[in-house]
Amino acid sequence: MMQFTETPPPPLQFHGQITAPISNPTVNKINQTQRTRPWPGFPTSKALGSLGDANCMEQLLVHCANAIESNDATLAQQILWVLNNIAPPDGDSNQRLTCAFLRALVARAAKNGTCKLLAAMANANCTLAINTHKFSVIELAGFVDLTPWHRFGFTAANAAIIEAIDGYSSVHIVDLSMTRCMQIPTLIDAIANRFEVTPLIKLTVAGATEDIPPMLDLSYDELGAKLINFARSRNVIMEFRVVHSSYADGFSSLIEQLRVQNLVYTENGEALVVNCQMLLHYIPEETISSSIPRTNSSNPYSVVESSLRTMFLKSLWSLDPTIVVLVDEDADLISNNLVCRLRSAFNYLWIPYDTMDTFLPRGSKQRQWYEADICWKIENVIAHEGLQRVERLETKSMWVQRMKNANFRSISFGEDAVSEVKTMLGEHAAGWGLKKEEDDLVLTWKGHNVVFATAWMSA
Image (cartoon, rainbow, N blue to C red; front, side, top):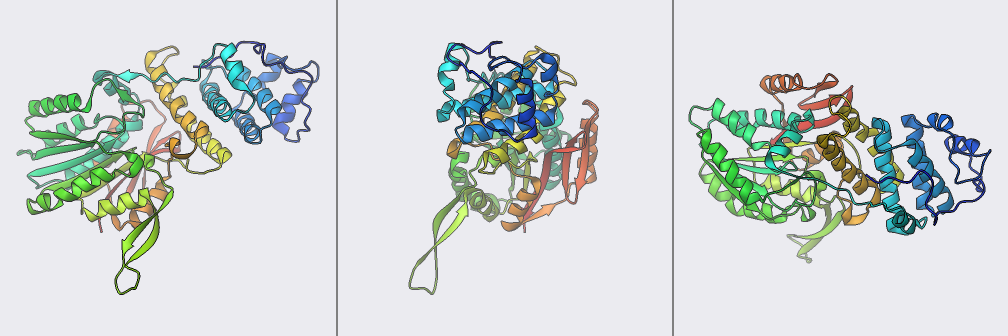
C-alpha cells in the first residue's frame, strides 16, 4: 500500500493558510484546525479524530475529487495530506477504505497532471502500483471460500442449474466467471450426487479475462486438465474448451462459436447452460451504432444504436439457452460523473473491508490479497476513464430490466436453492443474510444488499 511520510516531502512546500474561501462545513473544520499554525503543519491528533468518521471521510474525498477535477491544486493537496493522516493503510475498516480511495485520487491526479504530485511521490519513494497476487489453485479456492461473496452465487447457481438439466444426457456449460472456474468442482460434486446416470459435461470458458483480479498462476489449459481429472474422480465425463473471447467486444467470438454449434446441440437434445458470475458488468455499456437489414425500403439497411451489453444479451437469447444464471454485485458504478461514482463506490465497498475485520487478523496474507483486489477495483472506478474503466457495476433492477428487454423470462429459485444458501451462510460470520425478492435471491451484510442472483430462460 502507498504510504506518505509524516511530513510532506521537500518538493511539496505549502505556506500560509487555505486562501480560497471555503463554505462547506467539512472543509471548514479542516480550516479551523489550521488557524494556529501554517500549512503544512497538520491538525493535532485530537482535532483529526473528529474527522475520522465515515461520513466526514466521504465528504473529504468528495471535496478532494472536486478540487482535482477543477484543477484546484492547492485545495486538492491540502485535503490529500489531511486524508493521509486520518486514514492510515493499517487502520480500522473505514480508514483502510478511505486510504484506498485516497490512493485512487492520487493516481487520477498524477495521471491527469493535476497538483504536480508525480514529482512529490517520486521523492517520497512511493509507488502507485497495486501488487495483486497470482494465486495457486489451492490459494484461490481458499480465497473464494473466505466469505459468501462468491460462494453465495455459486450455491444459488448450482441449485438452479441442477434443476434445469434434469433429464438431459449432455450438458454444455458456458462459464463466464471472474473466479477462474472455482465454481465448477462444486457443480460437478452436485451433479455426481444428484444423478444416478451423470450427463456428459462440456465446459466452455472465455479465456480473455486474465488482466482482472483475482489472477491465477497457471493457464486455462492446465486448469482444464485439473478439472477433467477431478470430474473423472467423481465418475463424471467432462470435456473442456477455451475460447479466446473478450468482454471488451461483448464476447463476440464466443457468441459466434456458440451460434455455429447451435444446430448440433439442439438436434441432439443438449442442454445449454450459461453461467454468468460477476463478469457481465465488464462488457462496455456505451451506445454504439450498427446496421441491420430492412425490408420494403429503398434503403436496404437501417442504423440502430445499442450497447454491447444489450447486443450480447439479445445474441444470447437467440441461442435459446436452457438456463442463464446471472450473478453480480448490487451497486451502480456506471455514472460518467466522478463524484457520483465515488459516492456509490464508497457506500458499497465499505462492506468487504468491514467483513475482513470479523475474521482476518491484521497482517495476514489473505487479508492483504483480498484488500489488494478491492483497491484495484477502487482505482479502476476512480482513476480511469473510457475503455480503461471496466468496473461498471449495475444494480439488480437495472440487470433485470436488461434481461426482460432481451426477451428473457425469469425463473424463480426453488426451496432447495434457498435452503442450500442458508446452510452455506451458517458456515460464515454473523451479519450475512439472505433476502428473496420476487424470483431473485439477494445476499446481504448487516441488512445492506451485496450480491444478487437471478435465473432466466428464453421467453
